[in-house]
Image 1: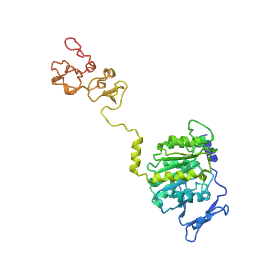
Image 2: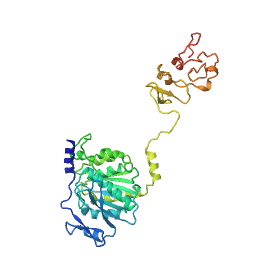
Image 3: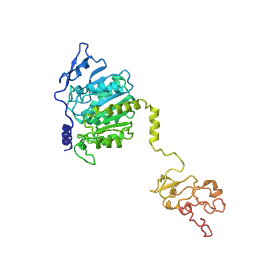
Image 4: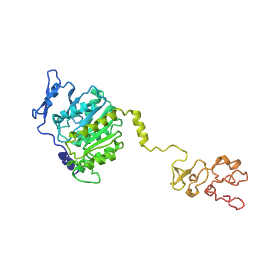
Length: 391
């Protein structure tokens, strides 16, 4: 049942343009170029003369061949790996890629999912995961790009493979979620828990991302409600200032001036974010408890009590810096190790043994507790030889 629902959800999630808006053509020098199959208005033919564009065909572990565009910027310090939405292919995105490459001063790698554009196979959740993993591996092996210099960008459904990969890469420079989704099922209906057959469970994966996350969402998005973006932003461990575009829909956020302006600011800050600065920021955000002899508090002993698990009983073994007896109520006769250890500096003669916790008369040689291992002595309730209470 779960597999059937998952397959049904995949059908609603993917709408590749049919026919594709481009096809590949091999040049005389053996390199691939892109030719538009849509209309002359589409500027893909200019890609044939673009020396900064590499057209790639990459194999995935599912056996599919996916098409990717790599746009080089000689002034770039970072690389943007772009995962597009569910109803577009690279032919429609080429103009946007050129604008982002120039305005953001980045290298940009965009790719078509299996079954999109000139890529082979059929689109599915698992295939998109294999697609982005193959593209990232290509960035590493073919272009020598390390994860510290990569920003993952996911639009709409593209937020799924983006967060899938981001959760696996602890040293990423950043993540951008553009009209992102909490999960596939949550786009269709409001549910408060995750079903096993749900797809793109971003609501779980966002918590594993260890880099700054920028969320961009339109307030009037009628496909993926703004609440998706808002919750992703709140759940991210390291959230960057979000961009809520007032009046923005699902497919038109790039037309707003704030879009490119905010992205430029984010990219510039990520360029200046060195490893040292990131570590300082992490230390500042995490409430680290300084190491001390007092340790953590337990309910029975007050704030100067270290709690440890006693190996012989289920209660705590209480110990403070002065090694004195301040917490007899937490001790039990079943386990002598539950008592606090004595102040050994005051013990002399036959009485100087850890089992004797008598502190008032412990320095006297006449102490009758020299062989006592009873719990009453530890809590000050042991009587001396005259029948008087020593505590």
